[in-house]
Length: 123
Image (tube, rainbow, N blue to C red; front, side, top):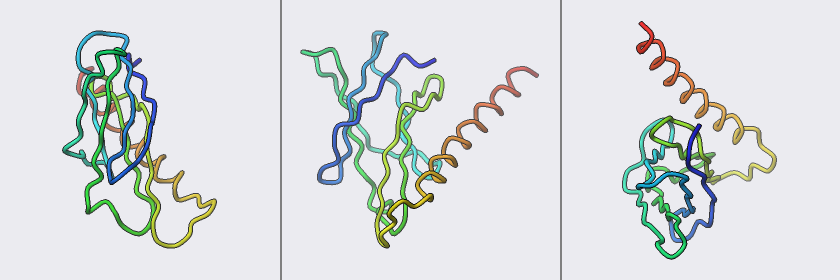
């Protein structure tokens, strides 16, 4: 179980922001993925007055495309999913199930990695 909690704030000027709280000391270890691949360039800065951490994720230009683009934020220590954000562009999607399918795929990929790691550790 993760010691981190993610609270989304806003998306502005191509940067998605969230607040991270950590029940343990030290800089939170975070993974951000898009289509199962790591997203580079995100920053975590401490907000000393409030004992919180600010996560800023710049959206890569190649991730801005028609359709649904989902970014998954997880705890790097135990791969627990903390949250996600989704970009929808192009055709008006309304109540489209494609958003949910993208989230399910991301969670399934995370489960597969955890299962494979478990199999390696138990053999």
